[in-house]
Image 1 (cartoon, rainbow, N blue to C red):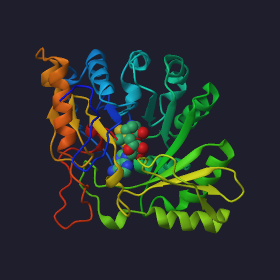
Image 2 (spheres, rainbow, N blue to C red):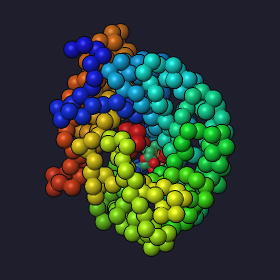
Image 3 (tube, helix red, strand yellow):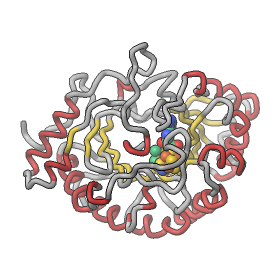
Image 4 (spheres, rainbow, N blue to C red):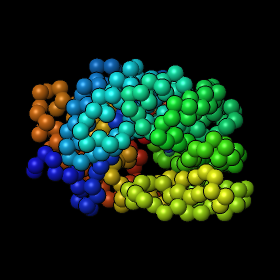
Amino acid sequence: MNDDAPLVDALGRVHTNMRISVTDRCNIRCFYCMPAENVQFKPRSEILDFEEFVRLARVVARMGVTKLRLTGGEPLVRSDLPRLVKQLREIEGIQDIALTTNGLLLAEQAAALKAAGLQRVNISLDGLQAETFRKIARRDGLDRVLAGIAEARRVGFEKVRLNAVAIRGITEGEIAPLGAFAREQGLELRFIEFMPLDADGNWDNSQVLTGETIRRELEDVFGKLVAVKRTDPSQPAVDFAFADGVGRIGFINPVSAPFCGSCNRLRVTAEGQIRNCLFSGEEWDIRQLLRSGADDHALAEMVRECVAAKKPGHGIDSDDFVPPQRPMYQIGG
Ligand code: SAM
Ligand code: SF4
């Protein structure tokens, strides 16, 4: 097939979005993602260098990928990230570059990232109490995250969004404070249902606080939420505006209301494995191709094969669901 034909899977889903995990390392240890101690990080030699990521991005951009998101692990622990952003920005066809970060190092890096061409930032903020942060991250750091949010607003990214993972027994007391904070700061807030991607393998359906429960709780406090019409059918969040027009709330409900039918994402892990789904049991080793002198056609064919093999859905709700072998920090969220 022609190397610039679009990346369409068997269900007709056109892939225009790639998530690049730049590292599996992190400066905290969220229980829904990493083990508490003795984390086995990949050796540096196995992690793709910037030139390898850029070459892959160039190949997928020719196949119609227009949006890139840098993630990890914690992407800001990878040194010199603005240099990668700048190189990705120069690729023909790439229209949007975003970052997902825990925010701890953002105050120091936001200006350089903005100058390099980063357009949008999602900052993870699961609550506003130091105790909640400590319980989840098993480290301190809420003040640094808040400083990161302030600096991201100051440097003027096109969009700064807050992401909160919703966990039964932890998040309830944070729903209204997070809603109020997002409204005050003029930031969009998204609640994401806890998914079975924790390294400890402790996830259980009973720990999922659904988007619907949170929406009702927010309505009790702030009044009716008004559904916002979807402009991009592939975007996973269901968005609502507050009735007074101040602020916006989104719900990503992969467990209670899967959105696999409109998924347009593919992923590359920090060590160069291509995945067609967070929950995929299969990976395609593009690092091996990148390091063996393969041409761009071979890379494009491998990406196409990966997309073609995408399953209709993740199947979390089915009885025979098997969580992926890799936890979130090794995949890239
Ligand atoms: N370290 C960065 C951060 O935390 O924002 C980027 C990587 S992190 C894996 C990406 C996103 O996935 C974060 O918003 C995080 O809260 C979310 N996440 C991690 N594990 C999750 C899980 N088991 N279920 C739902 N979301 C999860
Ligand atoms: Fe680190 Fe992000 Fe995973 Fe938390 S969710 S442990 S910040 S990679």
